[in-house]
Length: 125
Image (cartoon, one colour):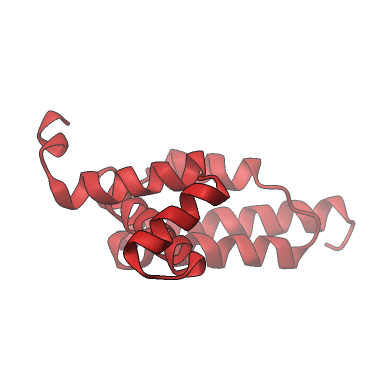
């Protein structure tokens, strides 16, 4: 992981993502916007883009395991089948092309398991 410290394409989005996570005061937002000659919304958009890029990099460096997916599904709040479908779409979108077919199939099976569990709890089987 030490070699990642030296990679600008990893550390720059990481720094901006952390700045977004910690938050900026309105004064700091305004100062940066003025300095860059952009709007406050554009500053926030840039920070969000950095966070998205850093998340993508993290997934490519350390992709989730089947166990990670099972934990996500098990710990997700769900109250109806549409909640589970929403979770499935989010997981698939997050994985995009980076996931191998076996992991995608595991996601599908986990989602089916949760749908069956919900339907059983609701007496819909």
